Image (cartoon, rainbow, N blue to C red; front, side, top):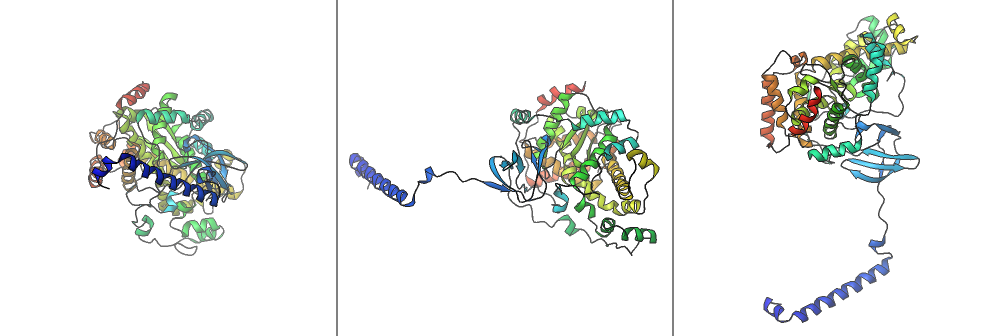
Length: 480
């Protein structure tokens, strides 16, 4: 029909459309009668989630920082009630409602790390030899922390940092992004463990004195530790990592934690936003403000992140502090603790093998059988390594990686990526007396700035993020 004839016969055209609609409706009714209940009347399909790993945590709210309410058994089928980004609210028979994380495969860029480094090996049951509860307090006491300081520090480190409603308000007020599910695979660049030269495998009869060979033969765990170049990365469970981090936190933070509840809530809200965009957001993190003038920040295993009042005062806006905290989150998310332990495996093995329970251990932990004493020795050796790395830096390779991924976390959350560049300029102007000694092991600030500028140029980043200087100013005033 031409446009002219259509204009001349509106009633005829309308009749044709009405008749056609009636015929179509009759066909739909007939089909519906033949097939049963119409689609609109069918109940909605129930979506389920099957637990893939033994001991997967069930969180109270869609952020790990608010704690684990239960551990789930592998194979358990749960009903999905709702979703929030990569988080799923689930409930099952005999299981309280809670939140689990779905797959979070992100294209964050950079060289991907083997899954053994990224994924937590949390288990529902902890066998003997993985964790000795109370080790953290004992380690702190061994390094001069009094019982009173240890108790006060424990209370501060175990306190819930914020309510989920406050988290939602924080994100909305700052126009920041909650985590988004990303099911696309990571880059196909070979994993780091595939690109590094193969290290010689040490067996019980090669390269070790007779006394050590006998000790290795007596313990399969110790034998595996010396044979496998990546033993710690693969077998360092989250429970062990968290207890290690708590030990370092006791030694590092006792008597130094800032007493402002409001400031701690603010820093934890920033940090938890970064965690939601990180490689490893399935474990609880805690962000602690240390009342010291040095410009510094630290990351201990298990998600303990520290920032000094001097560092907060050196920032001009929220984007800068987010970049600093993002850098520290990256140390935990990229498993730098476990990866660095690979380099210390023989040193730790030798300190363990043949070790006997001595008086200092018995005074701290009471009577122990040799196996438990050996475990304490192992944990002490690892805690010393972690404390040194936490306070003196993780080495240039890991620091540059933390720069890159920390900036990516902050950028993906909504802050402007230049926050890190501006903060590094403070350090470069630098290297002022009040800058903490921990920066000495980092690459020069000028090199870090140049590396990030090349990254931003290569990926076409724009200065389209937010800075939130006003909100930052309100909370940084609490430093006084």
